[in-house]
Image (cartoon, rainbow, N blue to C red):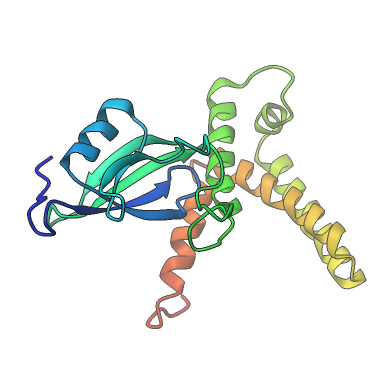
Length: 203
């Protein structure tokens, strides 16, 4: 990389993002020495502007930031570092310096899709997902319908906990059905994204 450390008197801002949840965790500054140490140790190291010295995040708390990837922006004067935190990032004890929870459950759907893809490829014995693939489209479609009906019943009954349970069953079976057709949950996301355009018209 060709990082321009000259624009800000030898410093560049470094945005730290959780590699799993994609949450922005904190912002710090690096000089060339801090950057080189980060690359060498694979633990995020900053330059403290108040103390005018290097400091590795977690050196006192034990909550290190383990580097996954480092990218520079188009102007070569800002870094985006994806890392895996050992614990809370903020000195206040919060997950992030913006007092946010470092979680993003929606990303689990992509992980679930990858898991079901592997089941479809490997078809391991004893797996319920494998049995669905072997039973064929009609069985998978039937399960989607059954779980959808049960979701409707729980919604009308006002049982939110059971609604979440049955809707989760429905979504799982829907992903299995989509996978059997060479499709994925991401295809649904793309379709919904297209529909979100104010110029979209139902066809």
